[in-house]
Length: 75
Length: 136
Image 1 (cartoon, rainbow over the protein chains, first blue to last red):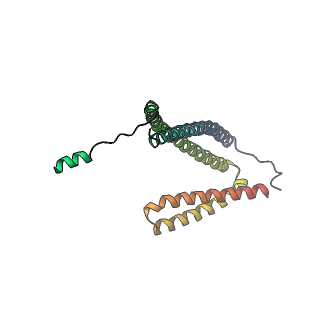
Image 2: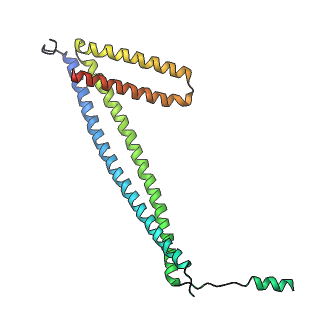
């Protein structure tokens, strides 16, 4: 029953409601921006990790070459 | 005589190495890449720090939104908000009772963890209540 009945809100409270709604909207927008920034930073972090992995692989190759050279002395 | 014998024993033995230039080059490259890796680690630390800060900011924003939503709920007409408020008051009582018990029985170090757990539990309860309302 109550769902179909009209609801009346005091005009001063209505204004407050609008203010609160605006504040919520602003904060949601802000949250969206921050979330995008977090996403960008995550991507940057992934790239850094990838670059790190690549460097370590290169070092591994170099060390393998050095190892091979050192253990195969000239006769 | 003894000295001469030790000198003879200590004579160095040389081992020939193929491509000594390449070897040196590889060692230098290795050093360079290791330094780059150390730099990468520092960069990664910075990025992680920035990300952590942003996550904290996001958490604060979400808490703010939640507070504002509660304010909005309070501004709603009494007969609609009544049911909500009753539920909220009961929940707050339960939560504070639980937290009081925890505070008296456990040490300060574990309080933060419990507070987080209680917060998480209260959020889960609220979520459950909202879901029930949406279905019903």
